[in-house]
Image 1 (cartoon, rainbow, N blue to C red):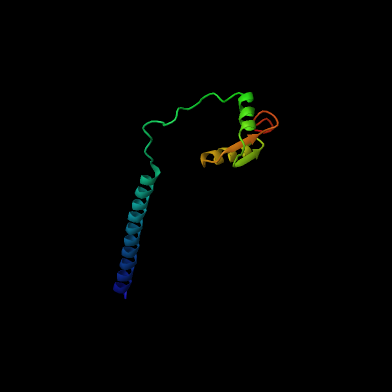
Image 2 (cartoon, one colour):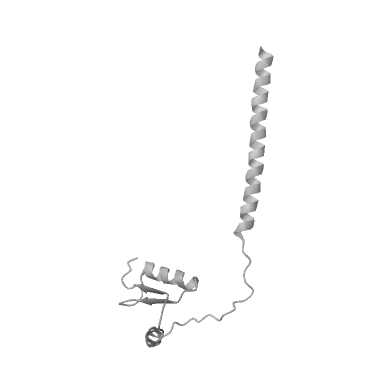
Length: 109
């Protein structure tokens, strides 16, 4: 009777240890795979020069007047409007953003 209990206990402990080792090895494999996905190779150089200074208000108004059609017109340059306009531009859409005041003037922080 005592021998059977000892065998059952040994089997349970051994099975638990085996399950733990297999689970940890799978987890380690998953983590290595995720780490490889997290890294992105940086571009060697930027193809277009970055314009650090925004165009003047007059230049922006001329662009709005002289362009016959936009894909998207965003009304309001707050946090949401600016984010929507940025998203549209990064998707390659011709985007116009209009704001009554200065950009983000009505946004509270």
